[in-house]
Length: 112
Length: 304
Image 1 (cartoon, rainbow over the protein chains, first blue to last red):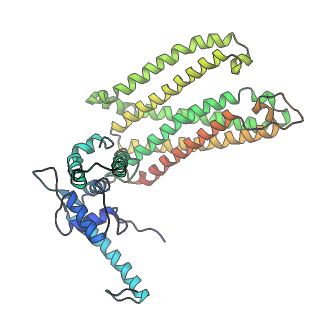
Image 2 (spheres, rainbow over the protein chains, first blue to last red):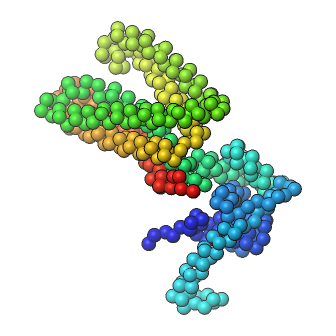
């Protein structure tokens, strides 16, 4: 089975870039707020090094863009290309989740 | 923070620092926290150099792959010099009937080595017009230090060559091959200068090549030549191993430096030869990573 790679370079659901795009889909945030939001919805602790490494890659690919700011904490927002890339990842995840749930006999909201 | 490249620090440094201060909340950073920042900084340097990741264009990874092979080649040249010293006058030690295989292996090493060296020189020559344009555009200060150090070491190397040659001329074979402690020490020091000179010229070449904008066509050509050099390195390593196996079978006493033919079985594990092959292997593996980067991104060169 070949590993599917998104054109935008996004891979697995818990990749920092995917987590950042998911967080920004709810609105622009700066670094610390991003890390806090990701910890809340995904339970993943992204340190400053990992977070800003992912921010650098996402900005390079045009999936996020910085907003002007008066202080050092610069907020970022998701771009149209970022939303499209995230939507594709989410569709893939949903497809996989549906197949898994069907094979396990799960209905959404129940646990095995 | 110093682990991060200067350009990255200029763009993101303040934001990263603000986040670090918020995260720490006045506490001292733990060792793990520091290490995570240092490793993230080194990852950014590797990204900037095109050594990892895809980057905004294919030129970065292809150029990085070619330069990795160039660095591997520099180490390989040192290994080659060591091998030529180990294999000096080997043909006299091998019985005539068994001479074909080690002789052919040695010839292959020599021929491939010369061919690869010519390719490397050609690659530098082809890049020369781009380097001249780079210097004319004001790029000289960014590589001046590297070039000056390389020239200084070259002068030191050349200055030692004549007196050492004169000294060697007055020594016999045994004295030249470790019998004279003073000569051995001076030759050892001079060899280090040679290695440092090669390393510094390689560093100067890498520093320049990283800053020059090459056309996609030129990058394709240079990367193709780099892949061929990497292939030659692999073949040379295989031929060296074959030479060693042939000598171990037909004239093991040559490898240990003992008198020929006795009732005991001399060990074929000469320390210098082991170190030489180990260095060749490391260089080939390093070059293989360069080939991987080139092959993965070369097809996308010039594609926007």
